Structures are given as C-alpha cells and as structure tokens.
Length: 115
Length: 111
Image 1 (cartoon, rainbow over the protein chains, first blue to last red):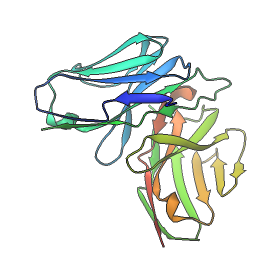
Image 2 (cartoon, helix red, strand yellow):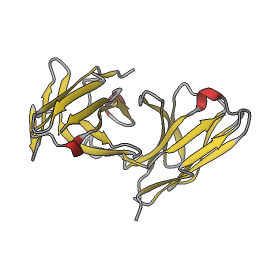
Image 3 (cartoon, each protein chain N blue to C red):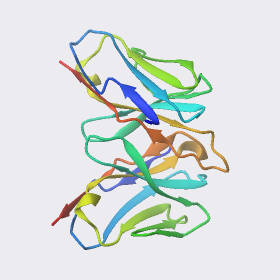
C-alpha cells in the first residue's frame, strides 16, 4: 500500500491555466505538507497543515491555494500558471512530534511543466 | 529562519568511503535527519540522530554531530553504485516541523 500518494505524476499545461494536484496519506498522520523542488533540486516548504488547519504558509504567491478536506488529504490548486511554476511538487506527511521526533513521509512527486 | 547548508556535489570510487557534510543554524532541534532521494523518486528517511548524541552508527552509515559547531556529517562506508543519489540534511524549523532541508549533495559513485 502506498503511504503518501500524489496524482498526477506528470502534468504539462499551458501558461495561464488552472490546475490541481491531489495528495492522500493512509498513515493516520495529522500533519501534511507541500514542498517545491526546483530544477537545481532545492527543496522548499510551501505549506504545512495540522488537523486540516493551515499552520505555515511560506512566501508563496496567492495563486497557490492548498485545501485540506480532511486529515488524510491535502490538495494544491494553482491559478494562472506561470513558466516559473515548473518544478516537482512533493506532498509529505508526519505525525505530531513525539519527544521531538517526526519522520516525514514523502509522495513520489508531481512534475509540473508549464509551456 | 532556519538555514541548512551542504556542499552540492561529491564523487567517489566504488568501495571508498563518502562523507557528506552539513551545517545548520537552529540549535533547538531534538533530532536531525538525513534523507535520500533516488532519481525520479521522493525523499526517504535514511537515518537520524538525537541531539544529545555525538555519533550514531547504522551498518554502513555513521552520523557525526558536533553541536558546538552546528555541524552534521554522514559517512557511508564501502560506497556502492546503488548509493548514487541526492542526500539531504534536514533540521526541523524551531525545533518542530516542518523539516527545513539543505540544498542536497549529489553523490556520484564511479565503478
């Protein structure tokens, strides 16, 4: 069973379009994240949700809107796509840290290409 | 905010040891982590170290932590071609989550 699954794996779309990436985890975790990995493989946190509530929203354009319908899902909707949005987007989840330990489990990534 | 730095590339011969280094700024974290990313895949936890330890050994992996210098290293003994991947050092921001990742070290193993 896949622990953290993202769909689609690949997404090619034109500038100006609106697209969504879905993420689901079956690990019973209460915290989920979206990370962006650019072409140089640098990984940056975008959003963090705990129990369906937004905890962290880094300096991400407001064209990006996460939605968490329940603890097991965190979807990412992107409006008016731009060339610079091309990247690999990773969803991850973790349990609330116990004594400071919280392993993050990652999905396989969604490679978004904006043309 | 938290900053985690790593060198970007490392190339070693098969059978040699690899040492990947990392420096971080947030000293409040209870744990520090090493993740591995193979081509076309997500990140997977490789190992971690509790902040009150200075060394942890796990088979071919040795993690060294120098809290005074805020320096973390990962040593892979007898490096194999299957170890070729990107290795990320990670430190929880403000001692909690989410993880803040270094830029990743691309390890290339030459047969």
